[in-house]
Image 1 (cartoon, helix red, strand yellow):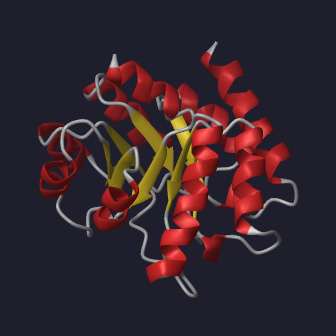
Image 2 (image 1 turned 180 degrees about the horizontal axis):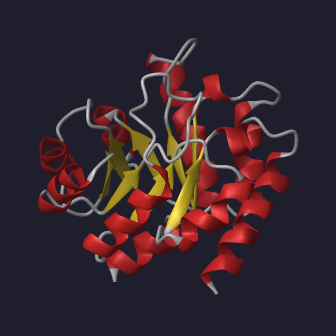
Length: 219
């Protein structure tokens, strides 16, 4: 069943673009993260120095090939044209990106659609247009997204889980190894991280530690 598959994939959801990686080569970070147990990858190529055009297409193809190798869903953030060109597994959109119902029409019923949400009203709307999952946050302050909304904390995770039990949910925003357990306990199906892996000295070890915490909390 699709919903079960989506929930499983949300466990450790890695979000990255080349501007997020400082200490290593981006593809090496992605492969290390996949080896460490990442269950889903979202290419979010935004910010200073972000790739565009053919450079972006080439990088995206390499990321997708790695994801296929490790049998992990490959999601594209916001760029529907890129997702369609690559035949990506899905698209993730924010509240300020292309309208989710329009994106669903463009990508069709088979690809996954994720929507960033910050409150119950946005979750309800995402559910009504057929989103496969929501990203809820920012849970904690984050330096990755400078225009991020107000921090929502784990209380909102609990409320949304109770109000929308059928909606797969991944929490995002400033999440670290130390805060992962409380987020899963609050009812999220998984955590989405950027810096916790992309900025780690050892990305594989970082991914493995978070993955281990998720599995032990879900038991």
